[in-house]
Image (cartoon, rainbow, N blue to C red; front, side, top):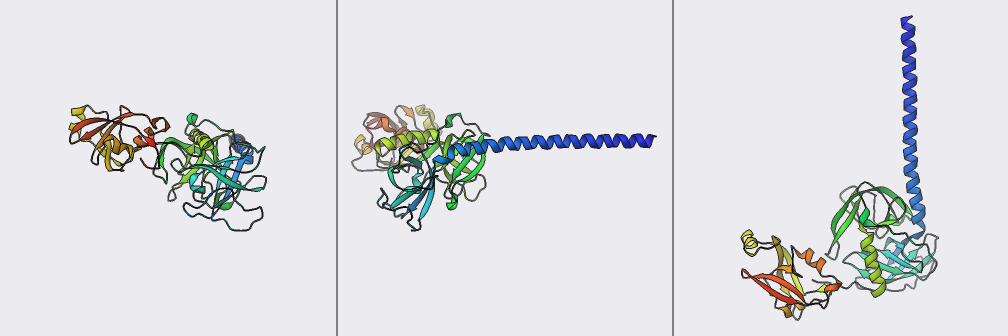
Length: 353
């Protein structure tokens, strides 16, 4: 009797374990389904606005503008990238490095149409550009708010890696607030880090949240690493795109100095009560520039700009925004262990500090 009872108990235990396992499996399936539904829904919303950009020619400084290529032209592109429609009348956001120097561009829409594209504005300092195609009533991307992003939330990249159109990869927002240096040498703040896989051709395409709203513009990967990909935050992209659509360029202040970040001796920091332990060493001054007119010399160390401490060259670039152009600004320098204050009037940038 004891043996039978023991066997029955074992059977009951096995059945319960099996039932619990089945329940766990069903729960896992439910989680997978919820994840899949979120990704599929987001892709369906963003998909119609994603554009495949074909680049023809790439000579630096080559003519850019409306392409003369027609649909069906079989010439091989010299490069490609991605983008997304910002307005119904054909404005497209992409990366500067995708289109910079292109001789002609073709945008392939989600409905299969190939249309010539013109470069409206190009800003290498933020690695963003705006194109326009001759079309109307186009499906546009919904924009999110990159300032509200949190690490761990779903991130979905849609683009055309290596020419494979409408490719979807998914991951999470790995981190926010990263800094990323563009090919032009400027530092972009608040860059999004994600592990959604990116490859050549994804550049310029949208990174979206679970609702299909654009949270970033995919821009770079670290090739020797895995899962380290970066996107320019959509709040930055939106502001830059608006300025490019309005003016065709981004206006920034220009001083006419070449500089580098250097440490300042602690005794000097204490003696002058400086707000930072680093500054900008002036290594060159362009003749006739705002810096030359203000009396800045090689060897000076810029300590303050606009009356606030300046901790390095990247901070100086951030301060030289459009409002500084043409405005007299107080600048403090360290010269021969003396603190000197000068007035400088930044002019419009020519892609130098």
